Amino acid sequence: MPLNMPSAPSRSQNHNPSPNRDQNRDQNRDQNRDQNRDPNGSGKPVKSIRIGLVSASIWKRTGQHGDFYNTAIQRSYKDGEDWKYTESFGRDDLLTASKLLDMAHSWIIKTEAEAKGDKEG
Image 1 (cartoon, helix red, strand yellow):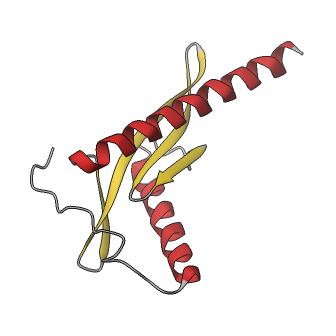
Image 2: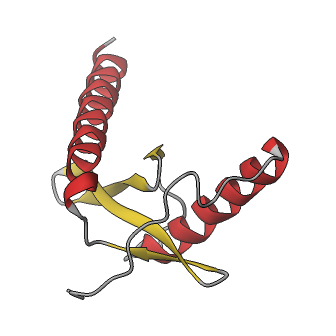
């Protein structure tokens, strides 16, 4: 794991007056992140959750005992003009990462319960 990763820029350093440009940038960044994060090459995550520069991607998998979910978290940062991603988190990112993992857990539990209900009824 890299030790000297650049820190994420603050919102004030990246202020962009155009909301559409911000939204397009965020969508492109999320698409690039998702394409780079799927270790099994099975397509897009079933759910992505982002708070600021930290994101969680939830991947649906199928194993011997049926479907299950894996979650990957990462932080995006800008290196020059390029967006890059790391799995290293600074002190100020830890509570955000924890909140994202909690949200991912809740989504997985709800999704599994709904799937179980569909099979039973």
